[in-house]
Image 1 (cartoon, rainbow, N blue to C red):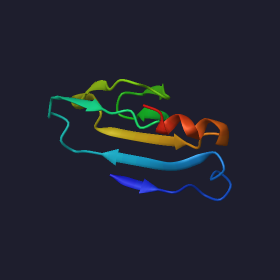
Image 2 (image 1 turned 45 degrees about the vertical axis):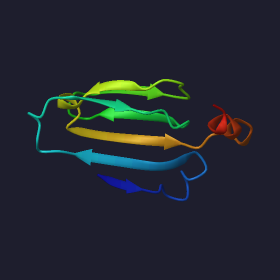
Image 3 (image 1 turned 60 degrees about the vertical axis):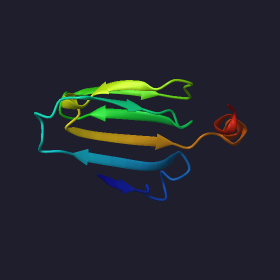
Image 4 (image 1 turned 90 degrees about the vertical axis):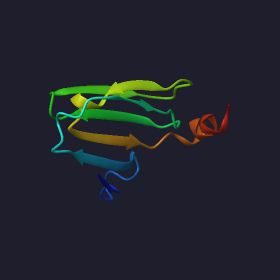
Length: 88
């Protein structure tokens, strides 16, 4: 997995960008994605699908067999919304 900070032009809106590519497409299983209080766009490049995720109070279960090539954009929350991350 590669994690990068965006260029200066995007840094006001994008916190970081993740890219993951795995040759092990046959591995099947289910993983929990825990909420971390960030707004994100997940692009499943191998399946040609996308999902938008925001503030959540529960985990999401994903099928790891369908996520062999993924890019995730984590967006910066406006200042007034950052306090939501620390709430139980």
